[in-house]
Length: 223
Image (tube, rainbow, N blue to C red; front, top):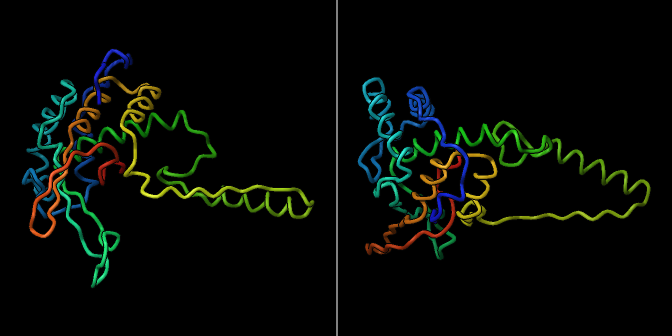
């Protein structure tokens, strides 16, 4: 939770520009099903010329205040069966539905943060980077294996499989990393505020269950 704004001392990020909002809308899928805010992406696409200026002003207000609307913090979760006869929880795929406008907000900020992070990442880092693959890394490992085998040199390889990585992201660590990347205080505060009091709603056997979300990244926030 974002409790002490003074620990993040980097200047605020510039205001969101209208062309960033337009780009976020244009590059999003034209989802026709309404989300909790009763807004669909298709509606935004059809009315983009008249909506974009007002939406830009609203998102900048959120960015300036560092506080997100309460309805952005509610995530409605639906369980879709993976098989025809699901027997346990693992047989279901959870789908999270949340505010379309909040998704645009985080999409714009993610694009900015990604651009800044490129200056800090090693060239050899390929995982979780858009437009990159691990083919070169795998080739390096394969060559090392071949040479060690050829010259009878001991080689230790460690395979790390992180299950549900995005579901277990620690928000405090994320804020610290953003600060290390010199992300503006207003961005860190807005994202932290959105996470700090997030709640999930899940319907199980026609019974609505509410719970507090304490970690993880919402579906779509990493794109």
